[in-house]
Image 1 (spheres, rainbow, N blue to C red):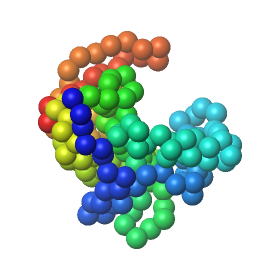
Image 2: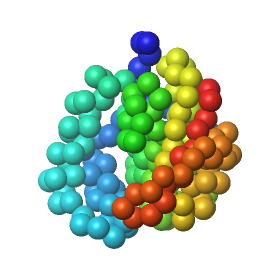
Image 3: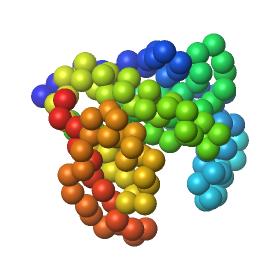
Image 4: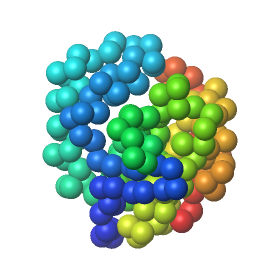
Amino acid sequence: MSFHPMPFALDTARLRLRLWEETDAAGYRALVGERGGDTPTLEDATEEIREARASAPGRGIHLLTLHRNGEDDFLGYCGLIIGRSTVEEPELAYELLRSAHGQGYATEAAAAVVDAARATGRRRLWSTVGAWNTPSFRVLQKVGFRRDHVTSAENGEVVWCVLDL
């Protein structure tokens, strides 16, 4: 089955979601740093962004950065990925800087991406979440996902949530 490509930009009441730009490298580094792992150099982050931009048109799905309307501030990302799933039934993925938590941005962005996924002609989306991540479950529930099954990964249980479009 053939799908329409996802747009490279989406607007919500408070957010502008857009394809990654090299100017997002510093924000991306901060986000990775908050995870507690190795933070990429600015050069490495910029190269990852270049590669993501170059490959986005061929996949038809991608992650978009989140910025408040009229601001250049990097809040995080939200979009569709293959992840543990497939291009036909991709995963909704999102991650925000801690300073952007608790303000409804993840839910607002996720709802926009779900609508965009529906417009591509897809019939189902997945999202995989660490069993410990209660805030992500709340976001997914608000946009219509339900828990489907649980698998094990090297760092704990993974809950698979599904949304029939």
